[in-house]
Length: 342
Ligand code: G3P
Ligand code: CA
Image 1 (tube, rainbow, N blue to C red):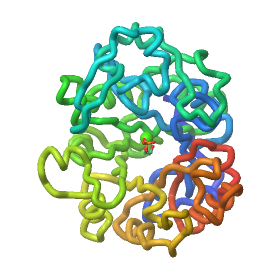
Image 2: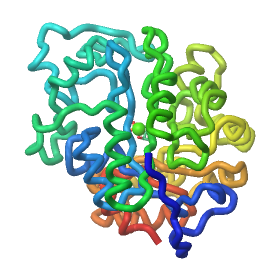
Image 3: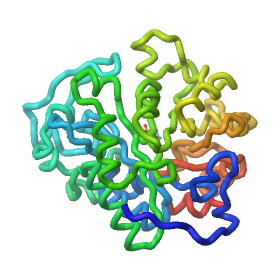
Image 4: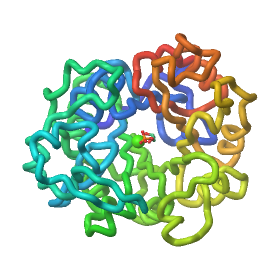
């Protein structure tokens, strides 16, 4: 992958000394969440390319595995919410137990890459534009990396990739572990060093600890809400919850294997059931004290997703979070996020 050294040290690109002094990263990152997924079907090359065109510093592919062990970009291994798999393969519907829950549908690990390539992507959310349904294919992770390389070269700027391992315990249990192929694909793209623009993320803990021994690339511990537990911790009966992980001791432990946290934005700016905000928590400053970057998810333009005072003004919501000192946002609408940067 072509790498570019940023030579302009503008205020917007000043490094946070505690987090990214050695990384040449913009101080605050816009991460195209599933691409520009607010505008185009998620996890397609077209959605990633639009995110890059809109200025995103990173694009975010979620990863699952095909039957033949190829990593593809999908938010979940059950494919029917975002593809036409039900129409193309009506007889392949089945039931699986995924992370302890029974689920019926069409699962990526039951399909070869050749079969996956016959599918077309659909918009997940009914209230978003449906006009591009059926037009775009499902990309492999290697194709996403190639796109990033092409776009970096064409635009003369670094573009990062922020892959998430989806259901790592489950994938390992069906003989399709994600991590070896992830590291192989990144290495084939020339991405091996801590200074490369890569963050690998997971909601689980065990696979991040394993990845810490496998790679120098940076790792991010995703955080769900409250009493929920990472699924591998449930399986191993450790009792560890996300609530535990945001205590000072918990953050210090995360810092032994990861370089950042990816909290739900409500962990930073809590709100009541009606969406009214409480005062901001001190999670950002405590994470920084532990040496961890903070990349919050998920920012979306639609009023239903905005914290109440920011209804109809998503830029104001970004401005509030950036002012709280976060280091990055996962956004479905990268152009809006770019307008919220200081
Ligand atoms: O990875 C950050 C954010 O994407 C986590 O949520 O469910 O969209 O993968 P999800
Ligand atoms: Ca994700």
